[in-house]
Image (cartoon, rainbow, N blue to C red; front, side, top):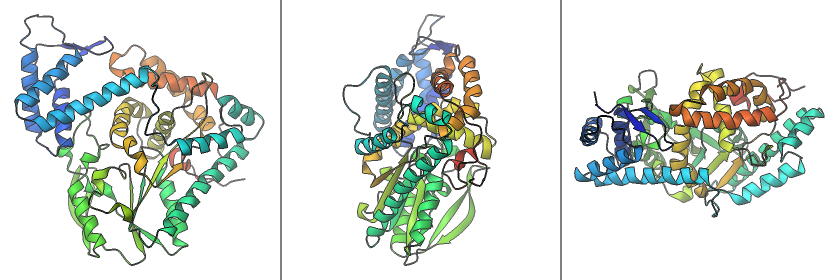
Length: 446
């Protein structure tokens, strides 16, 4: 047990010192450059702790920045320059992200799809849905069912444009990648696009990348000690590329099968071979990550990116955060379909978000097309189903320094949901609506 009991966070909060977090941080950086030696990461972390313990002050409480400086020093001195570089890059990314959260940047983000944003904003203004006040006015006037119809129609237009683009390039394409961050609506979108492509004689053959996860003991962990399935480095990227190349050559591959209950690949293999009218479909968080399909020519891939690009201002005059919409979606989906406590989803969302910011968002500009998966009518439904819980979390995390991110998000979303006129009746939402992915409940439209 280390003699150091507490550390000081950037906010000034004093929290318990957990050496395992150093091990996890080093191992994560190693995974980024292809290393998977957890024992070595642990040994390096012990060196960091030993350096900290050299401080003679019996009440010594190191600052988090001091610990991170020592991690870099130990990595470099032990000859792990590539790991040190990955660690430094991640640290710098997090620093820049915090700065952007605390101040308005004078430079427009290169990752924001401005042309698509302006199109969505124009639609929102035309339909009186560019502010929460406008949404509440229409809901109060009994127009909820109309908002559903209008939102679904806009989403369908995007689907049809994607299908048209794929059909126009069908002679060159061999693969369709449908991607986007967590709870962006990939499942429903994939189904709808597949159905429409069939009418044009095109079949999508799914390669489920979930089966390519590495065994659990090889995965990096998050700071809570949970295994991280969010990073693309949790996948066997070399095997994926090898088998994709074989499929392209007309060969039959043996797709592995992953057992999530035991966290290991099984001995069961499934044969797969492309037919003449088939395109490979990859539906994945990391479809745009370069390493996922690096051995496949870009001209043979159609890359489709999803995001709820809602253009609606709240009562504070700020636009509603897309990540907040996806967080609420995932809470409802996990509670409905996976028996997963929504509070746990909130507590871990900062880690999901960090992975998105590093591995997903920077690659948006490589997509061939974007689909807006935001449905303005979903907000009144979430206000009914989630407001009381967010108000509870707002109070629960207010004075917990270990849950600063959970409090920040709960506080922001609680304020939003309080401002929205709630709707309990979801019967106007079609049974095949993308929102049904998250709220469940097959229904018929009246």
